[in-house]
Length: 259
Image (cartoon, rainbow, N blue to C red; front, side, top):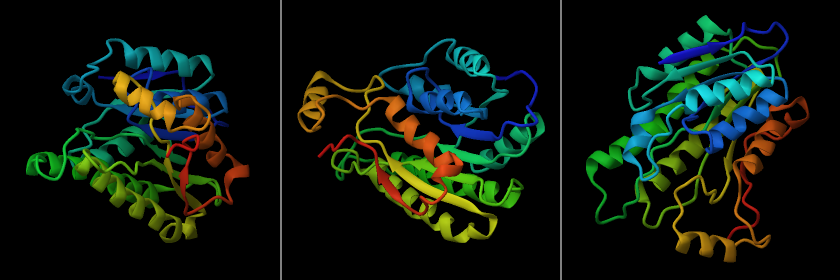
């Protein structure tokens, strides 16, 4: 399923945000914040992932996100995308360019995250984590760099990462590789005037926390509250702005001091 709202704007830059499957997710929060700051938004979603997870799918989420972005004046394009398929990143960029134009900011919020440790992770799960979290990130960045035509100095690459490892081995390991790929882009795409940063938002409860995990996170955060999608969105918004250009090649923690 795909959908489009409004016509592309001649003055608004275009951001591609991946992993925007639920209205309560970090990706949706980022998309809404960027739309409010004057960006047009293309976003991807993949409902079969949510269907496998404890929170399940959210019927009507794509349409609701589309409407929220359009209310901020954004032209939008929602694209269903299985990022475990190596052909998907190029297909997504093709579709975005056809419908909305060239991408100025690539914000990657997609992930595969299934809890398992050293002794019980399956080869299939390990490979799927690296296909989605690592390989797809590289291929999206590669396509973005090959196609980038926006004004020198305006390009942005941002990837969400994590330092979680114990009990979540394939997720943490694949995110560690994502970090290296993203930070390499700050140097390898410097000739295009593109910055690249990774953000670790810490634990953000988007429906996955048990009461035990919630209590632990509250105790471990100096401000005594959980992170929200809006907390991450504000940092992404700054990095995508002209004022955020000098922050480049960094792995940033935006986690309220969580330890």
